[in-house]
Length: 540
Image (cartoon, rainbow, N blue to C red; front, side, top):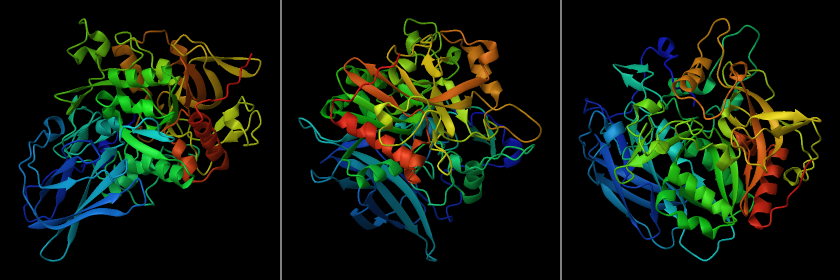
């Protein structure tokens, strides 16, 4: 939900836009594929704009061992015509080359590295990617990872706009684009990042009376990456999880959220599916696919956070639509009002986010982000240490796991309305939280940053208050509680299946930093879910 206002305008001055330039002597290269995913044996059509006479393309198995699976040199360069509003209508570029996959290509994400070389020997690089979906078989003894492409699209600002802002005359303004095309390149940083790119958990405790800092945003503006590189994308979230999972002996296949519209039958092949990182944006049909899978006995391991907005896909799934303010959506007030593109818990949609994920962004949102709980531990406090998810961790009641240096409870987190009884947290269920939901651990969170002294806020509390005022929630949120939320780790049953929810975008940071408790909890969840017989613990 972050970065949806123009609070940084005065600081930034001018903002960078990735878009073909008018100076044809400037070396540049951009590319994208005609689809987000393919079946093994399909042909990938790649569309490239470059000012170079020729360019090179390399395809890397980026979710596997990083091996080179395709290479082609001396591909003729083409200066493509690009609409000014390509972010909304698509680039419309012609095909530049094709990649013929075979049945031997394993399911995964394949990174296309495009290299243009100028006459003086200088180089320019661009990236594109595609997913190879798993083949249809009877049963797979592994994990199916669903890439959060609904959120990737919403934060992708290639072309000068995304679901939070647009750049006009070199300045970033808080005027979100309501239609975002999938037919355009991914912004720099969403697919590939250097190892020293800061994470949200890297920010130190805020000194007393100091203005808030945003190291990820500062780094991106300094080094020429998208300011949203830490908000979404393969490089920051899913790739580190896949590398960790495979190093620990798990089989991982990959699809993306948009595949749930046309290939949801693939879910039934797996005892467990996983979602990692920032999965803020979903369509109604995507949720239906998850609910149907879990209800039929599948298990969802969600190591992510900020479940919040409904979107739609239109024009043969090539455009993603999100109005956020419901009244501007043509479906608002009609017989199809439930598909209005605003937050799930709004009275006009009426489908609580907690019903699918157990937790929801409306009840959590920000932790250790700018001026939002800037000196909290960055970890989760344990309340039910005897639960099987904590087996082997040696965690006690009141212990904190996932704190420094990983600080997994950073950036955006999810929660539910809750109360305490006898020292234990319980959901109130007023927000649609499932009756079987068990809250295992918690962290303080707030629904926005409060102005205190000097400094700019990237997610001011006024934003949250504004969208609640514009579209009321389907259940009451007391005025005195609006500022406060909570991040949670929770588990619940849905039909014959179960959902474990880590409740934080930065859970993967615990795997990157090899936090022993985060690693053990992650293994416990995956191992139980992969047996198709998760253990249950009842509390009174």
